[in-house]
Image: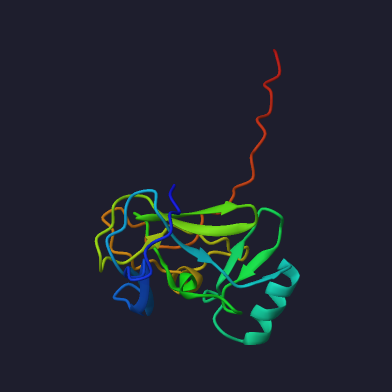
Length: 169
């Protein structure tokens, strides 16, 4: 990964604008190189209880939050003091990935990305409720990748069944 500073007259690494995938998106402002650090995911750091309270209070769709889970159990709320990184869309075949480094989250290019290409990364969402048709529709993936799963939901964890030992005759 590289984080070499750019000259002050260089084009920005990324810019936000309307996306054909989902509302707004983030696009490469210049050619990006594999392993290049593009942007930090910023916002207010809060506890999960506060994130849940905010989601309930907003009355907005449960599938439209800007929360990024941290290893320490807290959350970055990109909707509160965050930057354009919160607008990076999901893809089943991403060109970027997120890494947490000392409590900060950075988005890196997984491959060379041409200027103007939309940036995306895979963020399977955990939804504890039943995965009904309506929920799946609310979390539909529109990435258009040939291997698109059709959903941004992470597969539900299924309980492990214990095998009963056969009794000897």
